[in-house]
Image 1 (cartoon, helix red, strand yellow):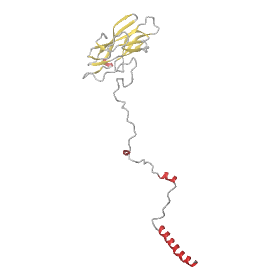
Image 2 (cartoon, one colour; image 1 turned 120 degrees about the horizontal axis):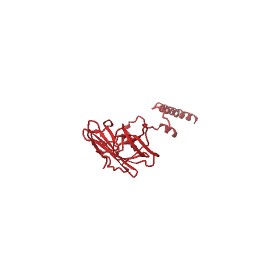
Image 3 (tube, helix red, strand yellow; image 1 turned 90 degrees about the horizontal axis):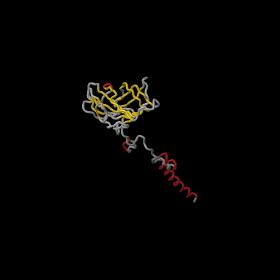
Image 4 (cartoon, one colour; image 1 turned 30 degrees about the vertical axis):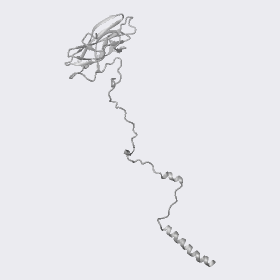
Length: 235
């Protein structure tokens, strides 16, 4: 029996040796699956070089351009109470707005009663062409030392009739006008803006007209009408 076992053991060991040799000479040793925790690092991450056209855009739609037409307010912001108004977008063919250098002003007719004064301001076109005015003039009271006095201007209020802003065509040498309405200084100089000069800024202009104007305005508060054709002021 020992001899038989030895005889059988030799072929069995040889067969096992041959089987192991065959396994090692195949496609190489096979590795065991990695532990579960190592699978995370092997997962593919999104590529930063993926074409942008393959993914929908995440950008929000752009907001309307700031250059879009406004509701009518002026592009520089709302004017102060004494600032001139802007001209409409369209004017008669061949005519532009009147520029300050083409205009002069003077005080026209006035009326007073019950502590109130109505004063017409006449604007004359001294240029060599027709031009247009639209809206309200800006005003500033100035004293004899050329210093500004307290001045507050409101539009379309007071005792002055106000037709509202309308386009006025001013021929060369022609006139237009507006009315100022204010409380007189019936109680002396206290709280009174007593002017020697007046600045008048035409609509849509930055430069002003400057001339003599002796006015006594209580608290510097003035109501103005829109500019109208002719020298009589609004009806």
